[in-house]
Length: 390
Length: 113
Image (cartoon, rainbow over all chains, first blue to last red; front, side, top):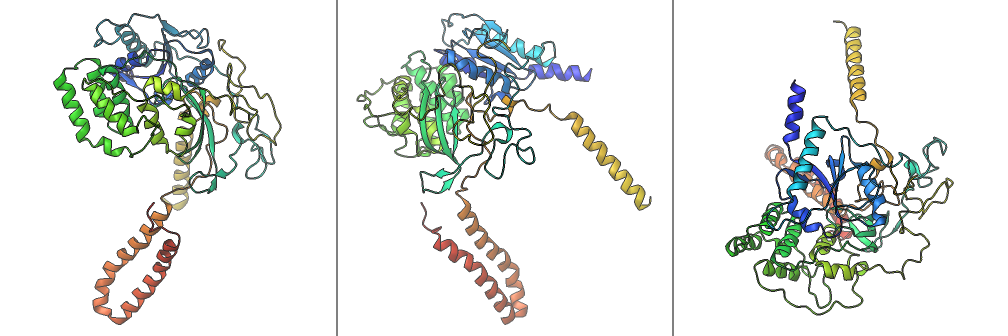
């Protein structure tokens, strides 16, 4: 009795949804999450529903499956106008609907379906989805070493299936501590959707960045509404989620000049421009992040975008991001408009000479290698199935 | 209750608590769930690693100054009664602390970057 009341109560809470945004769906998804019945989870660990919105690339499917398995039970998946084949098993699908003619209206069909799935999940009517990937560590480790801990000594072996970090010099002062190399993205919420970067970090400072997959193209929007949405992302990152939400609401509906004027005044008074370090993310001829922030405010207010000279050929994320702290790098990534970002995030082949290939239809298989040499190639998942069902 | 009974009761309650915790624990995380969340990507190495805590030198300095002040307030009361002896003792204490400050100075803590 009491438990079923609790279940009903849980079903009335906002549905925690983790969303992977595909091609051309970013604005639509952001409008959808302005609704109070939904809550956009920052990680799959906080979500019950995995929303896959829009068409995905073939090589993204493996990452979608991994995110799916990272969600706690009970969980459900909704494919919204997504083309992912059988990669997500027999997940529920919602076919593509036309964007509502009135931009202020959210996609009711998607909203209804998500809230219904959440209600069913919380009252236990809907069974949780099983794992798609095999529950195997990326490398065998158990029973290896004198105590079965996966290796010998402090640095050797692959305890829990992953090698220990070796030391490398820090960009800042040459202090040799442990670098952390990982592939970030393609569905990190603070990243532009689809962007996959291989980055090496020391603490929170980016040492090197390499583009593995460019961001997925989004609907080109250079109007006030698109500017407001971009502004909202920056405000969220700057720790001003209330202003971000207001900007998102303004983007969705009320764009009367007085409302936008009040909002931009609130943004100016919040001191958020002062929180952006001067000269951050400066690209030759394009100005820095503060310039872009002021441009966005101007465009949101109804003036036309200022024309800037062409991007220099040499400009690329791999030279823009190193040396920045994580928070600064995220601001830089989100300050760029889609066209500039696409130009900065082209895949460079010339630097891919280090022997291991992270790309092309999922990751390489490292079937079984010994306990010893592992540096550089030990860190990948290996899974039995690619793209198929569970 | 004698001591033996108390020990037995405490042991039984702790064992029951441990057993209940063990029974109600979350199911063991699967290999994908053990990954740090990277938006679908994978790491090369463990996240268990050493990095430099950049505020470390500031914390040392803070402790050096703060400890000084913490003991100087009660000392001020004692100084009225004791006089020169308390002065000597505080001098020794400050001398020891100032070694830390001199060390921090040598390390360049006062040059703000």
